[in-house]
Amino acid sequence: MWRIQKVTTTFNKIKMKNTLIYIEWCDAMVNQNSWMSLEDAKKWAKTENWTVSEVGFLLEETSEYILIANKKNSYDKNNPEVGGLMKIPITWIRKRIDLSKHIS
Image (spheres, rainbow, N blue to C red):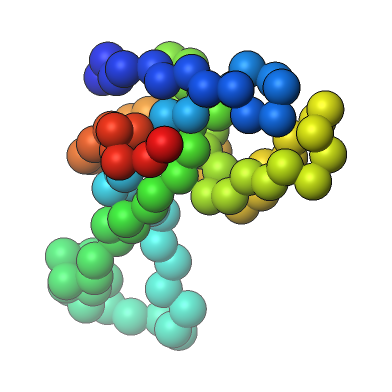
């Protein structure tokens, strides 16, 4: 598992981690076409790109998954909100970069 620096800032009077990360992860895929031969199925699996690039605020990390949000707001000063949530299994993540130093 990766170790990243946790940056804590005051976000609307509530302490929130302000860790921004870039990740590349492999997503599950489905072929919506009709039936195909076993040879064509293997060819499809080898040629399709299943890598997703994502940037978001790290909200939670466990041994099984990470939870990120791609946006947060300050409409309610006592209860900040987040949106665009993604829960990604740790085993699907191929690359991870801490971008926290690039935000204030």
